Length: 182
Picture (cartoon, rainbow, N blue to C red):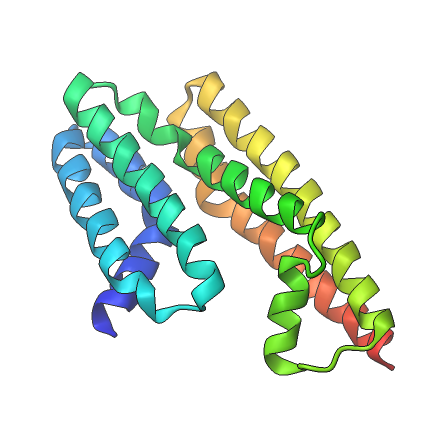
């Protein structure tokens, strides 16, 4: 449980880890820590929802791969692309679920409410589409921050602004859902 909490905290702090390691010129130490972190993350992931486990493992593998390549080729810039990779993976999964009988958001909703109405199922499909659009926009901005090659802007967006946008989307969706359920 403690390892899971630590790895979740480190995942949120990823942009700050990169920023500070570059500021204090200890990127190789940070890369070593990231290699350990992503490996630990792979080991503790089996405790999450079965159908989300593989998604989390894929993003952890991307982090592991980027850290390993960065270390082997001494190219720290590759570490900046982790948020882009995560947005791309989530976009693919959410978008693919739109072609399935149950979207990923419907699966989440059914954890609490196994018998969703047709109206609720249609709503979950719209929410899934909304998240797909979000992942495109968020991933594009994350990519732009990588290409600008300004670590301060990259850290600000990927370590703060993107989380605020996620919270706004989640909060807005929750408020709308309260009206839809009435």
